[in-house]
Amino acid sequence: MPNFPTRVYLEVGAKRVFASASDWPGWCRAGKNEQAALEALAAYARRYAPVTGIAKIAFPAKAADSFDVVERLRGNATTDFGAPGAIAKDDSRKLTARDTDRMCALLEACWTALDRVVARAPASLRKGPRGGGRDRDKMFEHVLGAESAYAAGLGLKLKQPDFKDAGGVRDFRRALLEGVRTPINGAKWPPAFAVRRTAWHALDHMWEIEDRSQ
Image (cartoon, rainbow, N blue to C red; front, side, top):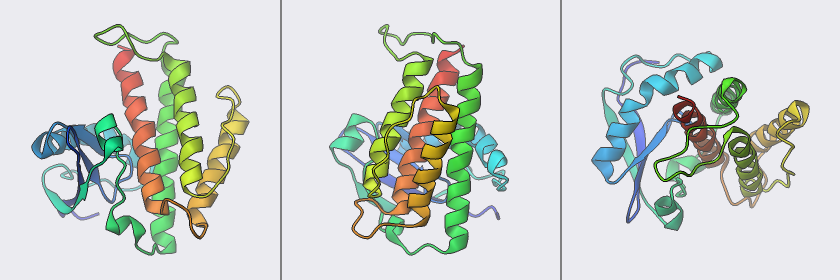
């Protein structure tokens, strides 16, 4: 992909701002203001790049050098709680088969990257500054539970799989991807937003596991 400015959505809440790379699901970071969010997004480019390698999609070497804010979204309580919750106008655009394939490949790569980190992380993770934070297995369970809720946004009813059941997790993810590829009329979330939110959550906790494994 050419080194054009990276297209970014800024979701602006009262207490927090999320910067999301519109064409790169999962590359999304937050800050106290717009500048801080964009700086955090730039800083995480090197950590996001391996995900695109898993998907076999070229990631521009200078992707973090220049950002083009294509849309500012009004944040909500979800934003300030700590998750991107606003749907961009571009999220609702009609996707081509190629767009959908690329989007799904990147989401699958996020899951693969998460699985690899979980597999090598210690069961007990370093506690946060106040002594809190989930350990490895609880965090993976949390990710799967959230994804079950995200599936509902697509109009799907998917039971959260047992995190120890690799086959069950694989089937669950396949069903979620099928919901992305075959949208249900009247679903709360458009597929692009569902992928963006799901990928963000998987990588956000993957990076947390990495950081707290040290």
